[in-house]
Amino acid sequence: MRIPRGRSKETAFVLVAVLVVISILSYSAYEFAHWIEVETETAMVQGRQTQTRYLAESGQAFIEAIERLRRQGQQVPLLDNNSDLFDGIAISLEAKEAGDESVATAEPEGRMTIRSSIPSSESSKGSGPTSSTENVRFGTDSEAARIHVNAWFLRDAKSLESALLALPAATKERVAAVLDWLDADDVKREGGAEREEYEKLEPAIVPRNGLLESLDELLLVQGMTPAVFFGEDANRNGLLDPEENDGEQQPPMDDEDGELDPGWKDFLTLWSVEPNVDRKGLPKIRLHEPDLGKLYSQIEREFSTEWAQWIISARVLGTAGMFREPVSPEVVPPEMGPFRFGSTLDLVDARVVGIYQGKTVDKESPLRSSEGDFREQLEKVMDRLTVEWEPQVQGRLDVTSARMESLSLLKSLSEEERKKIVDSRPPIGVPRNSSAETSANDDRQPRGTNAWLLTGGILPKETLRLIERDICSTSHVIRFETAGRMLGQRQGHRLEIVLDTGVMPPRVRSRSRLDRWGSVNSLQQEDESGQAKELPTLGEEALAPGSS
Image (spheres, rainbow, N blue to C red):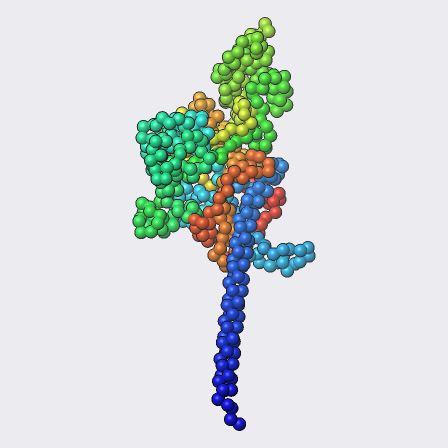
């Protein structure tokens, strides 16, 4: 049958329309499928990002748990350098239910690593870290090894100036500008900068003329550059990467000398603070306690009757090194102890001679350097007794891990004495004893007090006395990097955390993301084909100090 000409055209149009509709629907289906694929991948990426963030944050929780147990008197591992404890710990990402053996035996996909920014092979002289990944140190840093800018500006601006001049790429003009930024006036130091110089900038800025609120604020100071502030470690991984040792071929610009030059940021802090407590976290006995009866009871209970009698006699009659309160006897009668100890070292080899209530007093201190137990006694004295008035002290320098440049802060020490300190202490990265139960028989090992500087023959008593209140040999504030990553994935999350363990619960003083500077994979140390390390159970004897 012959189809009419008009009907044929209608049929062809319908066919074309159907094909167009089918094409549109097919393209829409393809676009929808593609959109679903993209959204699924996006959701998976975001999910992995969230997982790696929680993996990194689990490192902070792990450190906090260790410190809580330490405060409870349990034996826990030291945090300085322990790859078995902090390198590539496996953490399951599955929600485990009671009795679910399949989940319990499944290979965990998450890895958590806690590492220090200071490599284990760094020399005591404070030279820059090397390029070898074998030198990565798994553990935490002492924040007190850094110079507390604000505290030292208030305490001794001249000492701060000397220390800043010792930092890499320091110039008199740059240091003067930093001090002008900190002081409250508009009087410009020689080579420095004040409001007038900053108002000429485009855009103009207003100088702080006060204490820093952030270390990064120093980047606003005249003469400060990112290269000086951050050094050559562009990705903040503590290692000398190829691009950081190729001159000007690719950023960052470097001197191509085979050493990773640190920046000012690696030497400075705003967070170091030490509570006036002993190694067990108990408040120290104040030697300046105004109630002598209370002081007598405390000393007698902690030491002995001989100790209590001598300290009270010294408070009433005085001895070498002590100072008298500048008040009249009517305000502070003799029986209330007008004399004050300027240092716990005033007890060493001291003698009290005088007349009290008509009787001659001649007492030798029970703390004598000639005695065989002098080291143990001095450590106990410096751990349990204090001459500080405040409940906490900012800015003390941890001499067991501070670099040579930072030790320039202690003007009372000669360069030879500073070198003797760093040559006498354990290499950076060797676990130090910060509790009473560890390394008691190691003659080189600092034990949480400054006694090792005297008993080890490193500094004479008179020199140590000058700096004793400015230094410490342990730190309650620690800095560490915690990284989380997934097996077989390039994604990772890196956090740098400054944690104050001197308070309970531990308090985060500073927290910043590092993965924006570089991938977490550059820090990977474990072989993923090998057996994963399991997260240990804290509080077991297997994790006692000195165990692996």
